[in-house]
Image 1 (tube, rainbow, N blue to C red):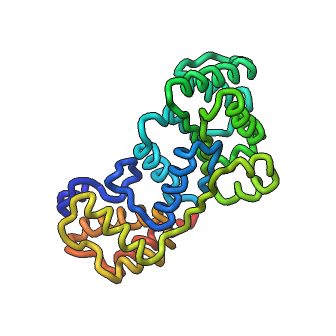
Image 2 (cartoon, helix red, strand yellow):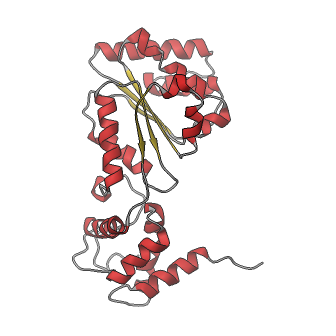
Length: 271
């Protein structure tokens, strides 16, 4: 709606997997390098933790696109809250490319093991990403996931498991040393600093085709203060600010517009 007004080629603050919009913040880039190291060094498992909205999903998508073709299949499970038999059946279907309705646990494990063994013979290594991994604790399937790592003994270095979740996953892993010890690396991403927030906003605008400054310095400082360095909150604030600025026919966005947008987003409508 507002792209042509601001002379943009695309909306700069959408939730997207387009790598043009990935901003290599210090913590994010460090995590990306560690995860690549874990996978390419044939580690059995790795951990990526961070609060909601800090960019874990885009980081994993960036990782998938950066890895050489031999790291396949790259399977991402985004809804892990399922019983162990359903979880294993789903993973078997994704890893083998063939889905079977309601197989027994032993059948799912056999199919996963056979597929990984053939994968290793072909010179490939599978990557299994479990998003929102903190929910595995609620579903009682964290132990099932740990047992998947034992397949490495049977088929060789055929799988890297990447657990992605919120920080509350960390104390759970501390209570499971048999899984915690298998983690080749642990990565914790944090909110952006003020300078990173400013660079992030500018990077996103440039990736969308901006040829001039749209947010002034005080506006960018306000974005960081109000979004607390969270990429998701930054995106929401800036996107709505661009819309309001378009509606009000402004040429540049200042602190007042950012504050007004933040107040609108956090306002509670009385009943």
